[in-house]
Length: 298
Image (cartoon, rainbow, N blue to C red; front, side):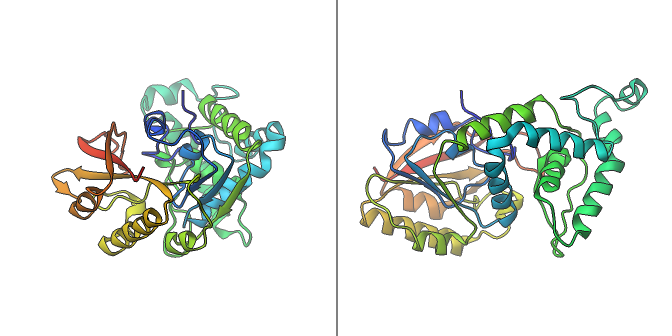
């Protein structure tokens, strides 16, 4: 069974990665991700080493912090629990301390009602800090709405409280991540995908896996993606193919009546594999009927 990233990305690939891996090479020297996101893909793929990138510096900061803490994981989890307690946040991993009356009055949202004041205080202190603590950022992610990482134009974290807390699933995901990364050779970077790809030194034993923003869907991270970036990415993949470098790219071809004709036309020259998608939009957290594919050049 695949392992899920402790960053809990909405729409990440942990439910699909076993299916995707059926189309990956058996032996991979370098596993490369220009859009690593939460990391559920690299966590579930065996390779000799990993080169992982995301343009979101906060995402990479969290990954680096978690990797650094993988060798003293118990102390890290205890520290998170203590920090949550200092803001009077619930922690169902330790105990169920939500008042019965609150559960009766807010049967579906009692975590949010209980944690709102402490969450808002934690968020305000994080945003005002001259040197922001990535552990607090991780707690904001865990207690925030849909476990999103979102910042406004002033680079302030602006996600509201969510109806979630620090529970067994969080600890299990952290322990899985710690176990995986503690035994791997990983190189992290936070760059635009074009600069990242330009600096790689790859051969035919490597695999570049890409899960870019989807041109025709409406996720938060799609705001910086357009037809120009889509075409530039596909041009880079054509260059990889000419250099005999293996790639696999996930993308959505049909969504709510929209069609990604740019990607569909480009993909005809390669191998197209239909996959069962679990895409969820933060605007509407219901699963939509649409078509997701994996395209490979091998």
